[in-house]
Image (cartoon, rainbow, N blue to C red; front, side):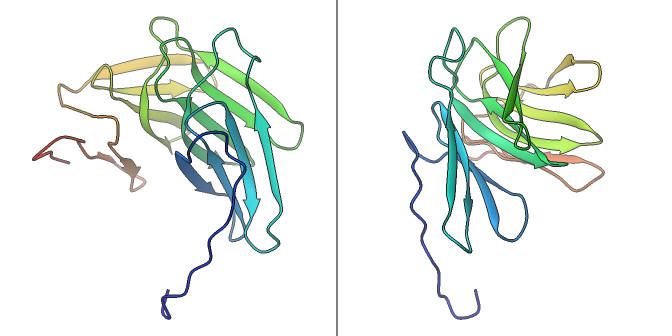
Length: 169
């Protein structure tokens, strides 16, 4: 960053890169806004990926992701069919936690207090998923979320931006 030098990395994404999450200083996980996800080792250039095409009745649109405690959480960004996906790299196990009503349309995800939080741009809501009980909670926030809204946590509060003209945070 001090010199302005940067290095680009080729990925094998089937569509376009949607989001990234850092595992550590070398491994970068990615989703492709479609059915693929994977990791890149920025030091060696090694690349590994998984394609979920045909794995579920309705293919996902993998969007936002969070790497937490040696596993990866991903959410659908455009699909009304599915919900969250939990991937365990050590075993290649991929589990889906379907939203019982309308799927999820996640603009962004964070892990906060052991729960997965998502901004749902379709419902203009904040969604909470408790992995232990597998319970979903919908919090209507009456704001225009938008598909490119961002969600962050400072460890105490959740912060989000609206993806609209003159949007707030």
